Length: 233
Image 1 (cartoon, rainbow, N blue to C red):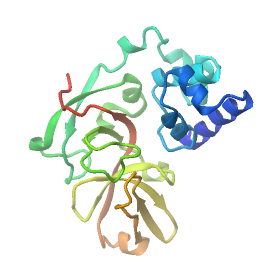
Image 2: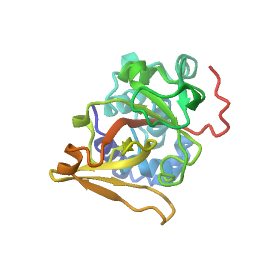
Image 3: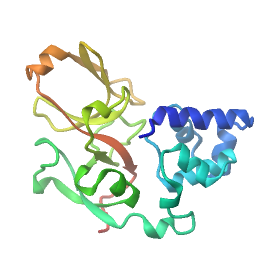
Image 4: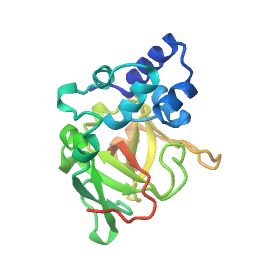
């Protein structure tokens, strides 16, 4: 699996080698320059093929080249003209809160459904994907309040420092944070435009003894900016 930081570095190297600014590449690809900058700096998950094609246009490389950089096999990805009709055919429920752990969740906490791009289904499997309505501003630089975070259940050993994960601490509802794991401690960091939110960390020995109990339930793999909850099955 391609690491988002390696992918971002590769994109940045190609762009700078061609003397293209972030703003120029974003305009050419019809993207937000702040979003493209976050991708280059490894602060965003590897985008969907449709967005990858926009980045490719902005930095003047082929669709096949950017798919390869992102770890996809080009032959298995629909072309730009057909991608919108072949993706997003499967729906999963959106949870307003998750406190019981993955993948359990009370039915009364479901507030709609969201279509999931087929490439995510193929990459992770439908049963390993979970959608969570974000409630709060602690990660608003990446996932705005009210947006839907799509999470993938992965092996904890596959979580890289800095990945955004949903975590349940001491039985509270799941919260999104950057995760940093060190030999002696685990650290959770917010990513907000506001200064109210502070990082917090726990000793690994305490966590091993469930003091407090910590469960990482999924890694952020996609964000849907659907704020009204009117998702269509």
